[in-house]
Amino acid sequence: MNMYTVEQLLSKIDAGEYDKAFVCLYGSDSVSVQRKRYKHAVNCFGDLFGREREAILFSAPGRTEIGGNHTDHNHGCVLAASVNLDVIAVASPSADDIIRVHSEGFTPDTVLLNDLSMVDSQKGHSSSLIRGMADRFIQNGYKIGGFDAFTTSNVLKGSGLSSSAAFEVLIGTILNCLFNKNAADAVEIAKMAQYSENVHFGKPSGLMDQMASSVGGIITIDFADPQNPIIRKVNYDFADSGYHLCIVDTGGNHADLTPEYSAVTVEMKAVSNSLGVNYLRETSMDKLMSKIAELREQHGDRAVLRSIHFMRDNQRVTRQVYALESGDFEEFKMLIIESGHSSFEYLQNVYAACNVAEQGLSLALCIAQGMLGGGLGAWRVHGGGFAGTTQNFVPTALLDSFRSSMESVFGKGSCHVLNIRPVGGICLDMLM
Image 1 (cartoon, rainbow, N blue to C red):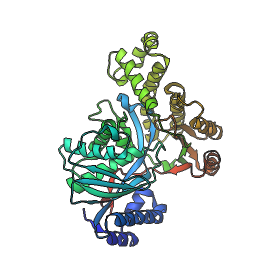
Image 2: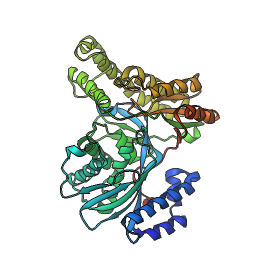
Image 3: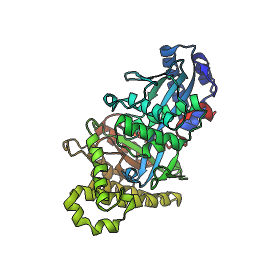
Image 4: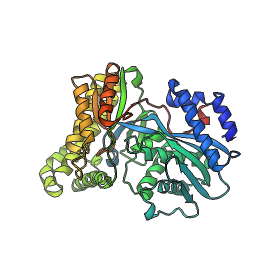
């Protein structure tokens, strides 16, 4: 890839040389906004690291989970898509073995590459994600090196759009481009990102978030064999459906919720082990129901209900994909609502048991049902749950009133109208 000085990058952006990339990533109506955004990032990079430095532009998207809520960590199926909110970077290789990342609004991260072992004290911090990606690149036989980067993100932290996965994929994309001539494919980068989050960051996430951010577009993934997931692009254009994908950020606090997320996997794991398998994907609903009395006694009702949710939502993904590819959006909407009810009632990830007074997600779902019920649209919890966002499919005629109603409750800018992005983590020069 060609690298350019700060002044050269600014001139190329002004001259419209990156407009094709901007249209691909963000849509034709966002070019002027993205020109300004990337110029800001380039200028910040120059102020931090020197305007004579040669650098490259990178982007990695947030993701929206469309189907399969908490199914990936039990080797299930998911339907997901990358979106037009992303983390971008201006990055340049450095002369030493140090990675320096200045993320706008956050304390700078510095990672020395001479020791990539996991550091307990840094779990939960972005530096651990950088260290984890570099660690896994080495383990997988790839090269690494020091680099300096400035990043800025409009993937809101805690939004359910997976800002952490986007950041991991961004770091992986930079390492892949600067030091490996893009030898690692998108699937491998996603796997390395999951390793970084699980081992170094300390969060037991599945692989869906990283895969959707890295691969891009609308994809369905079957994780029956997580080392060799079956990934298939789903050909459907939401823009032609007459509906808008709206994510509502309820402003919930994700602090101290890791135990809530972890309990989902722990409880499902306990049930699967009692059924003689490692993961629920390896058994069946019939087997689960035949042992339900014993499972209740051993693990409690919530663990059983969460396992039932997995079985049904896993099957629902296949039906959602078929509905989209058949052009049956009415069936798709019905399945979205079914999935949402299952998450609320059986998976029980709409509010945290440790803080029942805070139920922003429940309220957002209630308002959405009042506006979109009767076949007008669809609504569900989005992503991991417990706090954060809801996902809504809103007809064009109701978009303005829906957004106004949600923002009157959760604040201006809380309702995000998203587009599906066709590509995942990428160096922008590859789109020119």
